[in-house]
Length: 515
Image (cartoon, rainbow, N blue to C red):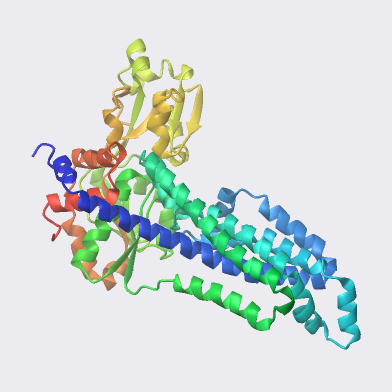
């Protein structure tokens, strides 16, 4: 059985290719959906605001000041502000994109209206035209070339900015970029970036053609032409909306093993049931964003870890042990959530130190580290510094006083320690890159870290409505141990395999895939 998984994957290139195509099509579709809905909304809202400002000039300065101020807010911060209001996912992404798209849209609409020859307006008014007729038949058609220039720049910006939407669980090509960073796949990051650039250029080219036609026939632009342009864009955006019935919405954290588990759930649930599955991969912030979202019904299930649920969700201060699982389950049931389908592996925290430092100072345990902590830089993912069982508790237990700390994405930790940017870092016991010979994993001699068995947190309502789902999740129970999970992670992180490919082949290896 040695290296069975490796050999199996090596001999099935067709599976890999189909997985890659599937993934790219899905995230490209999502990017188009988010971008074009945002563009259409920005055109309508921004255009109306610009027209309103040109008609009521007293409010133009305060309106423009507000829009300029909002535009200066960093995009990540904007997404963070919106999450408590609209949750995670596409809705929040679209709201944020529309807000950022308003400035060029409003500014160009207002400027175009203001540049219309005043004498033409006076002449039309003198001939008995109403205010609305002057606006619709004189000002708007003449301002349209300037407005179109604003639409072009706004569309390019929106398509590019949609790449960060993956941070809050929205889909799109940003998923490829973020996943590439997380799984140490530079090619995926590059492909995602190039596809966004290519898509922006294509859309810019299409709008350039429309703009040329408008400039060439500016005097002939009529109501029907305007309506046609808006209608075409709206229809295109509408076609991208893909309604689904009986869909199970799954979220995963931005970790390699969670990407694999998400794909495994997708494949197996759709094979064994009539349910559709929609997976939102790599939600930024992990538990802190996913758990509130699942309570609101924005997701139906996600892979979670018992220790994380105990400390980060339930806010328990004591260390979690698996003997407390029944209590954990009861507390989750109060939230209308249930633990279902424990996978079998324990992905607990650990500490790793650069090998040269460990050898120089003979560091083997967490306690040994305290003597030289003041000389070292400590690195960890963002949420580790906020957890009840995170950085502060670790330092208190082992009396650590590090020289400096560094927050970083979970996918960059090994790169950072290899480059000497950090000296000590948190690791997970199923990390595929633990084979790295440049680091030493220390012994937790005071048993600080609790158990982190992985299982699925599911909305109770979903299990009640779909009892077949519980059966499927239980069929996956205790099918993965620590070593198997680490091997799968390594296939993605070190060998460039697709998470979906790895998931599919593991299901086949344990005789759960009907192919």
